[in-house]
Amino acid sequence: MYDADLKGYFDSIPHDKLQACLRLRIADRQVLKLIRLWLQTPVVEAPETKGGTPKVSRSRQGTPQGGVISPLLANLYLHWFDKVFYRLGGPAHWAKAQLVRYADDFVVLAHEASPKLVGWIESKLETWMGLTINREKTRVLNLRKKGASLDFLGYTFRYDRDRFGHGHRYLNVLPSKKSLAREREKLRALTDRRWGWKPLPTLIGDVNRHLKSWASYFHYGYPSRAFEKINEYVEMRLRLHLRRRSQRPFRTPEGVRDGAHLQRLGWVLLRRSAARPAKA
Image (cartoon, rainbow, N blue to C red; front, side, top):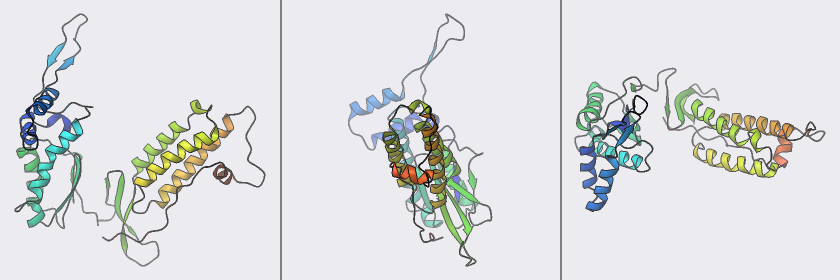
């Protein structure tokens, strides 16, 4: 497996090559001109001294950071890497390799990451497409080795021992640690003290909607343990909200646990039934 990371991706796409790719798809000259003007938008830098003249420059490579069209242009450009990868004579044929790409984040799956395959990938990206590979983050990975794992698009992929004692390993797919940390930060923001004025059903409804969309993305694989961690965190945040929204200390009804009481108020737990192990 070849896990690639492109360095300064949006800053390094050559304008001439990008516009050549666009001309293959767009015939309207006015649209092409508009995109060219977008790419050549001048960059104004603050003067070094007070009252000085600002420095104005026009880049010949890269797409505007934060521009609404930048991800689309970048995706159109890397589309040609997909094309040559799978065409006759590409590594999809002679190495039986598969390319999985999302924007500039991609991995190449193969039975063996041979020097020929790695050399082909790096040559196409750096020489043919004019991009720069981040060598520090790019790696060749054997996922079957003990302790090896891959974080990709919010998921962690790794081989774990079978939990039922059958003696074999299965491909475990679960939300990554970074994904869980980002989710906790979003939930913290949703239940922050500044929302103390919200009626509790409204606040819980907002949390439920957010959790539903998050869980719909991470339902693949084996997210049960991750869902349990998020449920525990949400319960803690809602208990804290209840305790600080009134001058009197909040107490759940006698004989009822906090979690059960919150569910009565509308909180929906994240649940995921056990699934069959994914094929290796």
